[in-house]
Length: 263
Length: 339
Image (tube, rainbow over all chains, first blue to last red; front, side, top):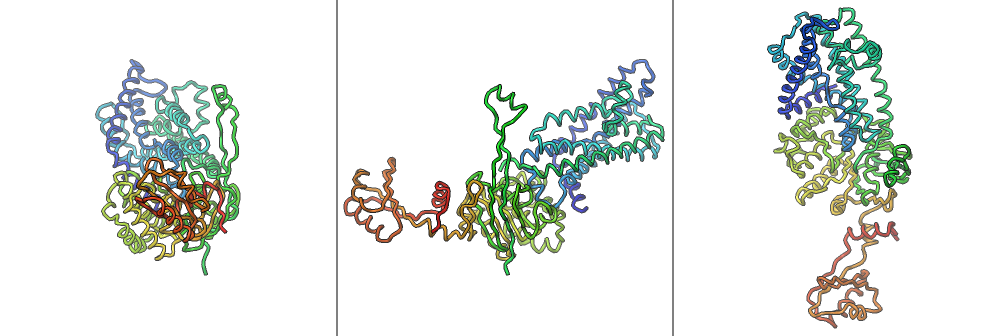
């Protein structure tokens, strides 16, 4: 366990090594939140609520989804694809640790770093600029914390799955990009689930994507009742377990037919 | 009793090699079905290495050296055959097994690029579960010998190649493994760093009885370090034995170079030495006449006597066939006939 904690520390150091990335990140997220805020304001117009969400709830939803994204989002798939393509995975495999476990820990280190040095300051800035309703209900914060942790795992598992496909496809840039768009759209980051047509919502219930962004954001904005929130957490947890199985399976195949590129 | 560090029995690794069809129509056909053939990269090789041996593993580019190393380190699964390294199956018991080996890939870094060297060391220390005492005892010495103390707080990306390679070597030794794989560790390094690394490898071999398997294209490395070489060509072992033996048996020719004061015709020189087993060659640009003869003392002196008696000589050189030349000859012939 020691080595995994050490990896989180290393990732912190790596994030600090690239400070500029970090500052521009805050800027980009603020711009995104601002853009969506004005877009939604225009859509709402004179209406007080759409699909059961008020404009204030909507703004909070947007701000919270982007800030949560800073925590669960990572480029694990791209990193893995690069390591595999350049043959660096060879070095990872001569170390006495689980490659995927270590990757997850790296992503976790990155997530914690962004949560504290990026989401929190960002949220304070946004709070003063846009009319956001903050809840002070500790129970809501607790459920939200559990929920974004689960969304981190769902998102990371999807990234690992996409990353592993590099072993078979050798070049999966297209797949990685497609996955990213699908997650942004179907996770509820750009549009809350309740805005999708009814049949699409039905299908989405059977997909893992809404567990990434929609569920934590709805919990926070109190768009869900308490019972709904608990059920949603259960659903997230179920996906964490389900997505773990294909990873195990693909990884064992990948190791067998691994080809190290370049010498 | 000597222990076996590596045991390899009829090891084989095949790769599927895809070939593209030509032309646009061919490219479309490739979308649906692809031509491939199975190419053996390593072709049923067997060898054993004892604990404490330093073995040079050499071969041309693409001969299968790196593939073998990758199977020995548990990265690749063999197609067939048996490998036992440090008493374990590298692929099956990977996590436990890699605790007992150290690997340096000359062409890829195992340190973290963006962070200071000592942070990488610290992480590796945790990863290999090295205690503080073990680390201090062993690594202080390594750091001193490789002279990397002043580099420890610099990020890896700011190090020169020579500095980085020394750090890589230290990183591979953090857990003081009984077996060390070095895949072209001196590639692109200057003479001083090369010498330092060689000295260091010799020292740890003596001190800890570390087994070292070294692949390189730099034969001076092999000559300086290894008593034994395993030579690979197109996936098969073509020689396995002492380096000295190889030199004695195949490097028994001498090369004589003459430069004359006056203009001399190659035909005339050839005519002069008819009856002697001499092969002549002429470097047109420099006007150097090269004679390849077998190493009989009398033959060399007879040849020189005959030439000196007939021509005025500006310069004369006698060279022994170098290991490099021996190896080149072997590659060209594709087999070793050790008599």
